[in-house]
Length: 338
Image (tube, rainbow, N blue to C red; front, side):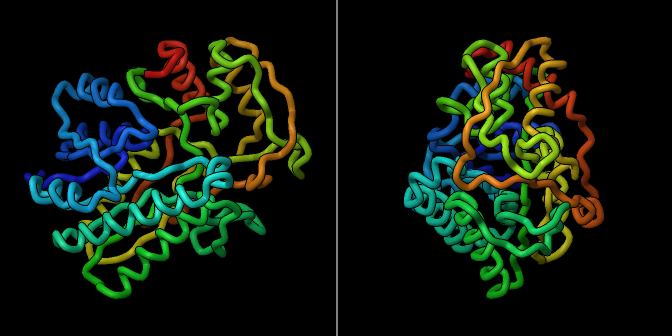
């Protein structure tokens, strides 16, 4: 490995922390920046415990151009994995301006700083929300794009910015990863998903009900056109997802290009199927009630993962039961999160 580093933005968040661990274990040098708006410094302590080493960390916001430039100046940054961003579909419908400012302006600042420091390799953390309400399934990368909420639109705008950057300068090497639904936790149970307040995502919500932190699981919508009426999603273990970023870095080394890939398992599970699987993994009863649909939610969403396998030599290996077991182990050992 070279003496150059990979900059991880939002590296103390759920996906960022797990990916950082996988990168370090694969021999990469990393530098993390995070503004701690949706993460915890305890995450860094635990990560350092896991890798038995200090991890270079800067508490800065990616919209702060001057501080970001200093990070590039003080470290030999070879490439960037860009996770930093606000990520709640529901919250984005209430606070659209904050989402555009944080996600879009933050990325613009990051790309400008990268360009001025002659760093032209980036892996961007996008989302399956850019497919909007798909007309058919499974979803391939060439599906029409349209978002049903400001969070998804912010990701879509960033994807378009990155495509324009590549069109203007073919020296860039860009991989856009469209994640489906990351769940699970590190096998050590030292790090895992640690949302603020009532979780927006299903798996941590189920886990917090199982551990007794929340009384009852609200299932948003029981009248979708699906076999049991609840929404169907493609859930992927966080470790499989993290390893996808290492495969993406291998792609960046090959040649200047822009590559877009889905990261999912290709299998959809309904909310009620997830509850049952979690009950088996945890041995706990999960009380739930079906309530109205949430704005911006869709009935079904799962991926076609052929392209990621062919272009990046990546596929998911961990099963639904492993996703549930690792989530339960993390939640039961860390009932209040970090």
